[in-house]
Image (cartoon, rainbow, N blue to C red; front, side, top):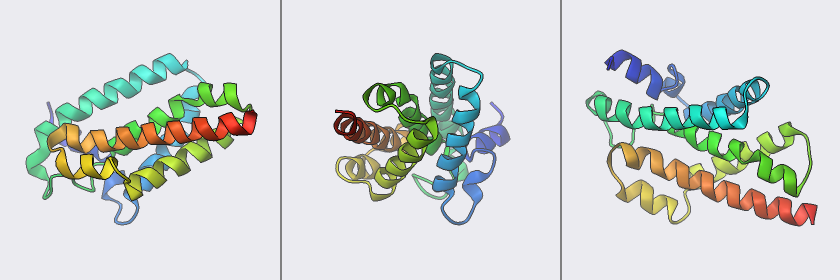
Length: 161
């Protein structure tokens, strides 16, 4: 593969090169991207797009590890894209528990994902510190997404109940 494209892909077209809060910016852009795609595509297709992003990220990270200084470089923000997208893809579950406008779900999905991704409670911090390579870079964000989904389901269950 083309290494320049891999680096652009991993940094979400240089969003990861933003000096401060690049992960937060990447998550915010993902929410906007999701809202845009949601107007034209089914959630199944958006899910498959996210799956392609995930699998290509693993390949791109493996092809580009020598371009970064650390084992989990801050410039790589495609993991935030995949994690944030997972939380957004659970919106149909939230809607069945508590009907609201889609922006409401997006704001809460963004907030909870960033909360868990930044604070990294156990086992997210354990995964972040002990899993190496491409899978390690991606997996802590996937677990943060799962935490976010579970918390949102619990909140909407009690709000809707």
